[in-house]
Image 1 (tube, rainbow, N blue to C red):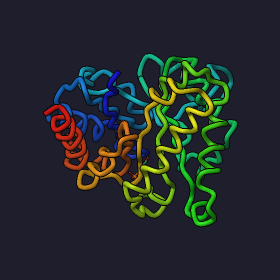
Image 2 (image 1 turned 60 degrees about the vertical axis):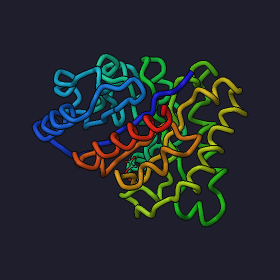
Image 3 (image 1 turned 120 degrees about the horizontal axis):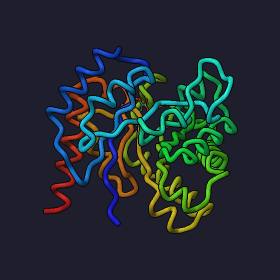
Amino acid sequence: MTKRTLIVGNWKMHLNTSQASLLLHRLQERIRISRDIEVVLAPSMLVLQPLSLQIDRRKFRLASQNAFHKDDGAYTGEVSFTMLRDLVHYAIIGHSERRIYFGEDHSMIRDKVAACVRNEITPILCVGETQTERRQGETRQVLHDQIATALHNLTAKEVENICIAYEPVWAISTFGGILAKPDEAEKEMKFIRDQVRRLFGEKAAKRVRVLYGGSVDDQIVRGYLEIEDCDGVLVGGASINYHKFSGIVDAAYSLQREKEA
Ligand code: PEP
């Protein structure tokens, strides 16, 4: 089974409704339908509903950047995955900004992953070490702990369908944006797949999609997409720039065409 290359744009807390609608309109004109490439947009919660009415579903899918793990109840200010299930295919879970700014810990992330799966939303689980953890040689331990706890409640079959994004915190534009070279990223992405193999078996390891994220733009994306273990990219800052994001999708097309030739 060949996997579609996944390009995910995390718009973070940028773009109000009309700005988001305009960006979608422009991307929609430029980006072609492809059976090999899946383009996913993660706008703010507020904008999901209007974009869902505007979006060309042959070209794009929507993701939420977060939600609450309970399906409903007296949780003032929260939105549940149950409420989102008809709007989104994916949800970004455990992003480092949520871990660091909002104190999301292993158990919250585990509950959110489980809530996604229960509501038939594919989690894009973000994992990655901080600069300090990296300097202290703890990268592998951090990745192992993040993966093992987040996937704790899932079956091997459920793990087959999820995505894991390797996002070294030090490489994310918000936290410094030091570029992780593709060969550095490759080692950790392989380690992530190996962890899935160890915990859930060969089939889950083969099918799980492993993405890379950290200051990716149109100029450097190719280096990551060429990694054997890389099934796509999670893009933050560059995803709200029309030229950069469409350039990233173009790079994925060109690589696909070269592979087919
Ligand atoms: C992200 O938000 O997941 C991300 C990778 O951000 P950036 O591309 O801006 O580093």
